Length: 129
Image (cartoon, rainbow, N blue to C red):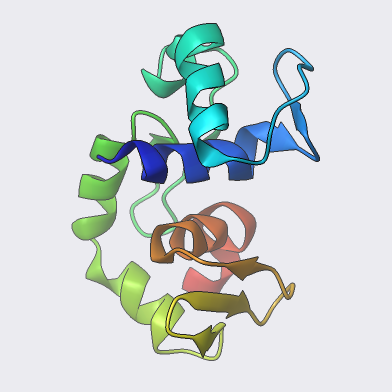
């Protein structure tokens, strides 16, 4: 798992504005600095050992999932191809550019396929019903 992928997920779910949601420290918008902050100040989040970890239920099988560590989450998603099929072959997502996705339900934009998948799993699980 690349550091950039981890940093993008951290930025989406653990940074609000320019502040860390866990400690309130002001952060740069640069992914390298966000990643460094969490590696140094909150390594337990990336390792999946924090009480502050984002959790949600898989809309397909009901298993309780955690955002981190990312690898088991990605493996779980890959076991349910219907997740990708539902998101990308429905009227849920508009591909604006080759690497920019728009959620048609709330108009959020993501420049990473993993982030749009996580967005639907966490924010819009009803699309899988």
